Image (cartoon, rainbow, N blue to C red):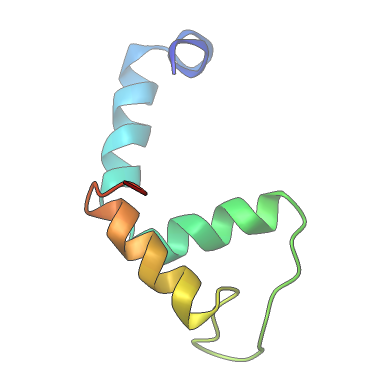
Length: 68
C-alpha cells in the first residue's frame, strides 16, 4: 500500500481507502475480476460475475475471516 500512497498522495489515498471501505465485497471482487479480464457470468441488471459460493467467500473475507 505504500506504493499506492506515494503515487496518490496522502489525501487521495485516504479518500480511496474510505471509498473502498464503503463498497460491498461483491462489487470489489467483481471490479477486481474485471480488471484482470475475467469472464463475467450472467448478464443483465443485477447479474454477478461471481458464483454463489464465490460471493459467500467474498462476504466472509470482508468480515475479516481467513482460510484457517
